[in-house]
Image 1 (tube, rainbow, N blue to C red):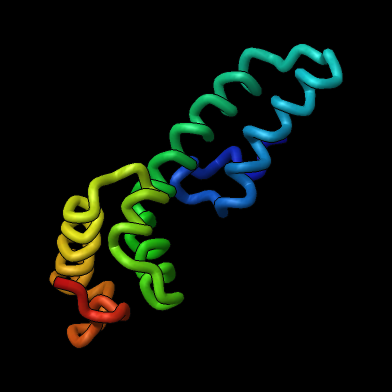
Image 2 (image 1 turned 90 degrees about the horizontal axis):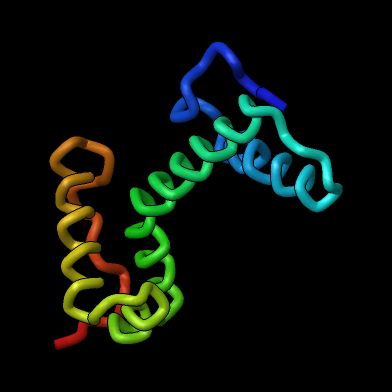
Length: 114
């Protein structure tokens, strides 16, 4: 399945990128060999998904903070050290603000920690 052959993967909806990966996985389970183009598309789609997940990790951290998670809990879930997780969130939020992608007043929504 090629959802948008005229667009680069970074312009595809996440569901379409995921479908490119899943289609090849299902083909393998059904013992149907994917074509070279399908296999390469799936590989590129995996890379795109990884990039998107990494770019949006700070939003998942923010959601966890809103839900009451501590930085130690977030760090454990993300496989990081607490100080590193907090620093990643704060630096990414600062960049988002600098480029106008986040409101200037936006801040860590969690309970203040030392």
